[in-house]
Structures are given as structure tokens and as C-alpha cells.
Image (cartoon, rainbow, N blue to C red; front, top):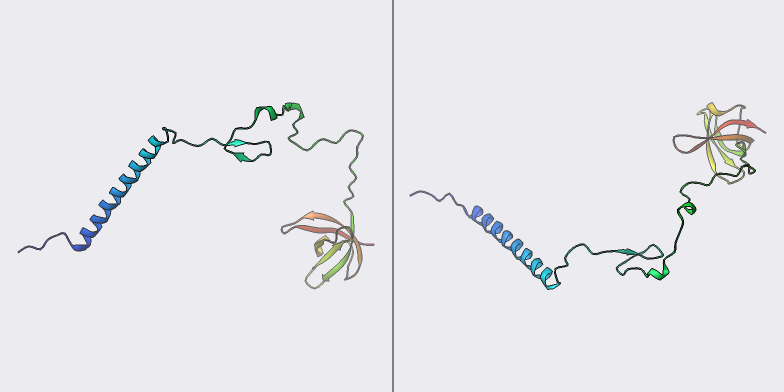
Length: 153
């Protein structure tokens, strides 16, 4: 007598697959019936933007519409006028908070904003030590701004 090729596990998998297919068909029919009950509008709902920039489902009131001329919209930073000069002094003053001459680096605290800036021995003009008053310039480094061209005051 020959043994059946259909094992218990195979038949269970087949039952699960058929049940899944039937559930999917029922969901599709339910969605179709719901769409017909709503009058056939099952598309994407329309969203409107109110005067504050918030999304709403109601259209905005046309009486509150504000007309803006395209020339009044500024997309970039406004240019400075010919008479205006921007005063920016690249040389800053500060105090050496920490400096290790054997390792060749330290930190300087800026007087204006109390920010701490990294200082490497390659950016020094004069020899510095802790608590010295110095003047320096800033340069973008790998991990932030670095103090360069450091001189004693």
C-alpha cells in the first residue's frame, strides 16, 4: 500500500493559504460596497491651506483673500544699500583657559560671547600660557571654529 504524498503540514499550509485568499476577497468586496454607499467618491480627499498655513478640509473664504504682488516677495537676503557698511572685526579678544604645550593644543574663551574655541600650536604667533590675554581670528575647523593667528596682548 502506497503512502500519501500529502502530509499533515502541507495540508495545513494549503488551508491557511486558501483562508488568506478568501479574507482578501471579502475585504475587497467590503471596500467596494462602502464606496458605492458613499456615492462613488472613494478618491483622495482634498486638503486646503488656511491663512495661517494650516491644512483644513474646508475651502478658504474668498473674501479673506489677500493679493500680493510678485515684486514684493523676497527670496534671498536683501542686499546692503550703497551707503551702508557692515562693521565686522575679524580680530577677537579672549583669555587662554587651558593650554598644554607638550601636546600642542588648548582652549581660548572669547570675551564677547564667552564661547570656547580650540587652539592648536600651528595657529600660534606668540608663545601662550594659561590666563594670558590674547587676540585671535576664527577659522572653520573639522569640529567647529578654531582660533588661529593667536597673539599676546
